[in-house]
Image (cartoon, rainbow, N blue to C red; front, side, top):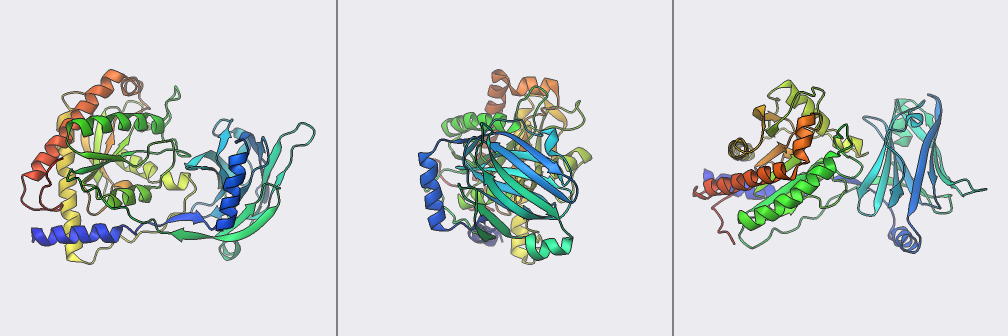
Length: 434
């Protein structure tokens, strides 16, 4: 049976490469090449302000920009959102500008969505349609503008006409075309052939999704990225593993995209790194989470719920997932993966307890979407909580970071040593280290 489980695990890795489709915009090759050429010749556009006018029936959203800028606009539901995709721009304004939250618009955020592309997302109070989308040139010293006008509609009207439609506005401010949102399947990349175990480190959040922000302005996305980069160097030098980061810059990656990334690279261990915030400011200490359909406690449930909203915050469409597993071998693979995840969780908690402060219950579980690869042992490491002053001070301390990294390196070495002592299992026979 272990051999069968190993084989089906490999089959699942191959099949899962094409799972988890992400939305992209259906731009023609000619339009993309032209836009790239123009961007290379022009200076980066600066966005200095944003505002909304209107009421619950109609609204006008305006971005003040330094010069002509092409953009696209489309709507999503569950919840209802307006998404504006822009070229790489410089945002010179603060998140959550109060005057934007008016009428149809209830919230507002912006940031990098991926390399060379920025995004603005507005949460809407109900279904709407894009009545107009256009650009205005600079006149009499006033900034140029990118404008989207919305009209409230019924749910039936939204489904019939607004869903999937994408409006394209050119640099001349005129609507150039209209298309549909389409799905694309990322092609898998072959795993490295050097024989070393592959560890994927996943710095949480990024780009338009900053994650938690402390009272003093420390951003979770920046803190965990810096931590993961240093951890990568130590793991490769001291633990005999190959380490790959899901992101190496301030860019957004969907939750499903992070899972697919690890599967496509044949990961033997997946560690998602976070430094969250909770309402209870007294909560502090490092915590290790594994996947579970039922959260181990209320704090874990709330945390997983917030983390699982990452794609929604970034203006991504979320497909309903069917978690029903009919094949008994796939079920066994999931079960054995869960056992390996629990083993690494215990190993990591044991390594951390002698070097850094842990939470009162350091080993917990909840339904984190980023941990749902059926064939990769996965944990989410909460380094601490930015909502707690003592934790924030520790997390930004180089001395604390060095202690935590030493413990994580030790845990990875122990985990693969234990796995290597087994003849067969979920990941097959142990591999020699290079």
